[in-house]
Amino acid sequence: DQQVKQNSPSLSVQEGRISILNCDYTNSMFDYFLWYKKYPAEGPTFLISISSIKDKNEDGRFTVFLNKSAKHLSLHIVPSQPGDSAVYFCAARNRISGSARQLTFGSGTQLTVLP
Amino acid sequence: NAGVTQTPKFRVLKTGQSMTLLCAQDMNHEYMYWYRQDPGMGLRLIHYSVGEGTTAKGEVPDGYNVSRLKKQNFLLGLESAAPSQTSVYFCASGKTEAFFGQGTRLTVV
Image (cartoon, rainbow over all chains, first blue to last red; front, side, top):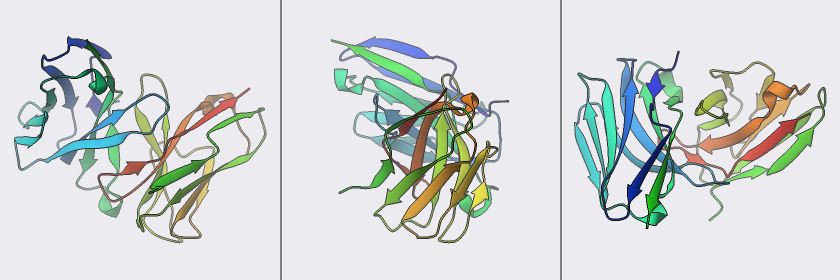
C-alpha cells in the first residue's frame, strides 16, 4: 500500500526543454513534501521542498507545485541539463508521526536529459 | 566536510552470518535514520533515532537491530542475515531535509 507514488519509472527529455516529474500521495496527513536527487553509487541529496500551506516553491531552475485537492505534486526543471540526469525521489512527511519526522518515499523516476 | 559516512561500502554475507553497518555524522544532528532501497520500492525506513540512547522501529524493522550509544554514530546490525536482506542501505541524519550517506551495498548469498 504505497502512500507516495511515482507512476513513471523513467522520463527522457531533450536538453534545454522542461522536465516534469510527477508524484501522487494518498495520506491527507502529509504536511511537508520533498524532492531528492540520486546519482548512481551515491546517496540521495535534498533538492527542494514545499509545505502544505503553499502551492509553489521555486529555487533556480527547480520549481515544485503542490495541488492538495488532487493530492499531487510535481517537480519542474527548466531548462533541463545533461547533469540533471539522475533518479528523483518524491518524499512526504506525516504531521502525526511525532518527533521523528519520518519520511515516506516514492519509488523514484529516472530522468535522462539527452544532449 | 564529511557529512554522513557509512562503513563499509560493499559487503557479501553468507546466510546466517551477522554484521554491523556503521554510520557516522559530523553535523551534530539529533535525528538519524536507516533506510533500505530495493528496486521499484523507493527507500523504506528500518529504524530511527531521535537522540543519543534512543531508537525506534520504522516501516521494515524485522531482522535488524540498532544502537545509538553516541550522538554521532548509529549502528545497524543484522544478527542472522537472510537473502531477503540483500539491498542497498542508506543512513541519514537531520530533522526533515535529511542528509544521506553514500550507501552500503549488501548481498546475502
